[in-house]
Structures are given as structure tokens and as C-alpha cells.
Length: 189
Length: 189
DNA sequence: ACCTGAACACCGTTCAAGT
DNA sequence: ACCTGAACACCGTTCAAGT
Image 1: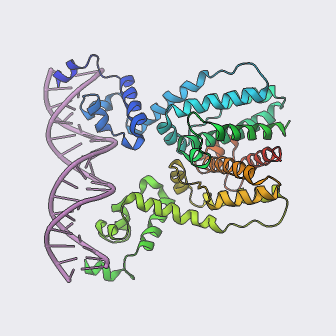
Image 2: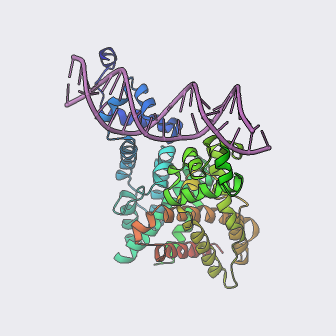
Image 3: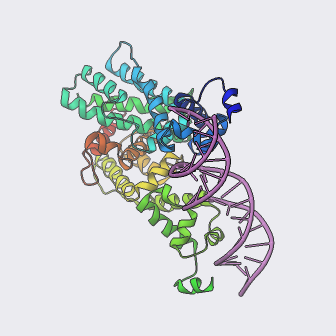
């Protein structure tokens, strides 16, 4: 109704929808997100959403796209390739922990780790400075991306915490895993 | 109705429900499983299911329990600890690929890899024969269980296939990852 | 162009009633 | 003890109507 529209400070927008949806997912998980509750949150008719988003699947896709965009500009400082790899992994960890519920969902579907995506590229770059040749660094980069991706899931879904007692602040399990990977890479040089 | 009950060769049973549910999940994924469709498949009133299963969540839980039970009796032949680790990983891979849809769901929730579970125990045993002492083999075992669990998810959700071209029959990506892990373990001895 | 209400085809689950 | 039908409170989404 016009009253509600006027009550909102601004017109309904795709960005506003995504923001509200992400807040809901962060708070209560993907399964708690419904088009109808989202509309209620925005004080809007459920059907209004469909003017800005194709459907619920597209909405969730937009959400993961939005969050993984944040990985586009992770940057590692100077240091040995081991230190760089360690830093990189921890940056991705921090990013993932910021939106655990969404990451958990996104990674169980298949498009979280992307060939040519930020994670994959950063890995390959570091591997080349480690002394791996071009084709080998591509192969190892892909394998490592998969391994780190899987590792991140064990962080966001609580497996790591259950197995090691690892926590958002205590990252011993995660760090151990990353060092193990680094040693594995070292054996390939 | 009595006719339907008589038409069924046997009375409705928890096991029969789980079997049918697993078939549906294997065929079309967890999201395609509904209590109502499952009941239709079994030629039964939807509500009859609730006499054998608490609710849908319990049903899915029972399903994962059923499938992961299969891991209870994986066995590795003789050989070096490296070969044994390699074998073990591949057995879990085969097990996972047999029920990709369910595994994908189970692992995005948090109770797929269990401390003291079959995967974790087998890993620890092998690690001790590799020469790691008791506490170290526990730590490394947990980390490795998380890593292999994550790796398996990249197999069932198609990430590995996308990154490497790995397939059910072609396991180059998976094998590379496992060897990298093995080398990482070797560095810890 | 954007928003809305009514409607459709689904869900999981409770509860009282049947056998 | 097991099964059932009706009912409740939800879903996502389409479509015709409003501004």
C-alpha cells in the first residue's frame, strides 16, 4: 500500500533486498530465509520482491556472489611463500567465518571455489613464487583450492571445532591443517 | 485404507521407509524428498510415516547414520603407511560417491566426520604405524579427518570435477590431493 | 515502471478418530 | 498398535489488476 511505501525512507531496491536477506541468513541460517518473511522484514508485499529478483534461487546466488566478491581484494604482505600461503588461508578463513551460514550453503552447492576465481588465482601466484613451474602450479593450485575450500567448510559447519576444539579465536586446528598442506606443497618443489 | 495395506506385501516399517527415502535422495537429491512424496511412493498416508519416524529431520539423520555405518567396516590391506592412507582415502571416496546427494547434505550439516567415528579411528591407527606418537597421531588424525572430509565434499558437489576434470572413474585430482596430504604427514614424523 | 491481492500447488506436522 | 482424514500454519510463485 502507498502508506508503507511512503513509510520506507527509500524505494525498494535489489541492493536493499540483498542486504536484508544477508542479515537474515547471518542471523538464523539459510533455511530460515523465506521470501515471505523477507518481505515482511522490508515491510513490503511478498510479490514486490519478484520485480527485483528472479526467484529465491537467484536471490541466494546473488548473496553468495556478493559475499565472495569480498575475496577479490585479499592481499598478502611480503614474506616467504610459506608465510604468504599461511596468510592467504587465514584471510579466507576470516572471510568465511563472517558469513558462516551462507558459506555453508554455498559450498554444499558447487560454485564456491571457482577456477579463475580470487582464491584460485591467489594460490597459483604464490605457488609460482614458491618455484613450481606453470603447469604444475595450476594443478597444485586447483588441488589446494579444493582442499582449502573443504577445510573452510569444516570451520563453518563446526566439524573442526568438534574435532580439535578450534574456535573463531583459537585457530590451532586450522593452522595445523594449513601447515600440513604447506609441507605437502614443499615436497612438490 | 485397508486395501492399500493389504496390497503392500508387508507392513510399513522404519527400515522400508529409510530404504525408500534413500532411493529418492539418491535419485533426485535431498531437496526433492518430502514426507508426502515419500508416503505416495510407499502407497501410504503421509501421516503413517510419523508412527515410525519422529519427523523429517530424524529421517534424514537416520539416513546419514545408515550410510555412514558402511564406513564401519572399511579395511585396508598390508603395505606402507603411505599406501594404506591412500587406500583408505579412496575407500571413503567410493563410499561417498555411492550416495553423493546425501553426503553433500550430511557434510554441510556438522555430524559427518565424527571423533571416534570409523574414518577418524582408521586414520589414527595408520598414523601410529607411520611412527607418530600417541598425542601427535590424535591431533594429526583429527586434522586429516577434517581435510579428507572437506576433500570428499569437493568430490560429491562437483568442485573437484570442475577444477581438475576429475570424475568417478578419473580420480587424478583426488589422488593428487591425497598424496599432498601424505607428504604433509611425512614431514611430521 | 513498480507495487499489490487473490489464488494455486505445494510443504511439515498435530490431533482426533477409526481399525 | 497402527493407520487415516481433516485441518493448521506455513512455503514459492503466477497472474491479473491497480497506481
